[in-house]
Structure formats: C-alpha cells, structure tokens
Length: 175
Image (cartoon, rainbow, N blue to C red; front, side, top):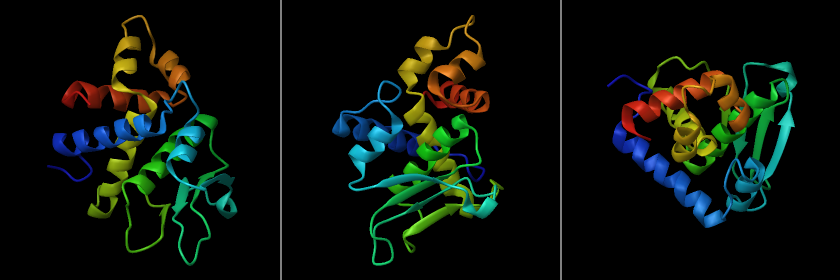
C-alpha cells in the first residue's frame, strides 16, 4: 500500500475517534462551531491565528501543555483563506488528538505532502479533518447530482478540493 494511503481499518479507527469526540463533547460541526468542539475536548486550549513570520509554507501548528508550554495551543496561519483556516484548524486538532510526534510537545506543518513515511501522519490528519468537517451521513444526504462541489464546499466551509477528496474516501471505503 502506498504511503499516506490509509488502510480501511485505520480509517475506521479514526472515524470512531471522531464520532466519540463529538458524542462526549455533545458538540457537532457544522451545527456548532469547530472552535467550540475543540474547546470542549482540550482543556484550556488556546486557538489563535499567527502569521509565522510570513512563512506561508507553515499552515498551522499544535503545542501540547508541557514544561515548555503553559497550555495547549493550536495555531493556524493567518495568511490563508477562511476555508483553508477551517481545514487547517481541524487538521491540527487531529495531530493533537491522534498524538502525532509524541517525542516532542509540538507539531508544525511546514513540510510538503511528499509521500514520505514521515508524512503518514499528514494523511491521518487530513482524513480526520475530512470526517470531522464533513460527516458521512450529512455529506451523502447533500451530495446529489444537482448539488455542485461549490455548494457543498460553502455548506461545510471547506474548499472544493477537500469536498472531492472526501467524496472519494466515502466511495472507496464508506468512511
């Protein structure tokens, strides 16, 4: 199996994690805000926009509470569109929940999605974000022949590219 392609088993595990988070927090996107869900899940989390000193390669970062960091922080690059910020926030939330980069207390998304084994976590975070932002049942209900990708993207607050990827994941593995 190619790197960054998740097995159906891993997709099921991540989908279950997302479902459990929403149920335990009693917060559901898009009915409720993504920030409300994150704040209900991670105690004392700070969500902020930051320009990363103009570095547009960095889309976001997550910092866990530790000796070095007083409280958890999820930061998104302020130089992105609102739709990109939404997906980046969900993606960084995924890194936190899935405990990516356990040897460090932070994860900075500044590398291209290049297919390397180090980028496997990126595939998982992208899948998590897609499942969180576009729940399968709601997506399937709205994904009709007369509904454009642009309309779906507007509804879920994501890009059309994210809509196309989500549709493919649902069609291939029903997640």
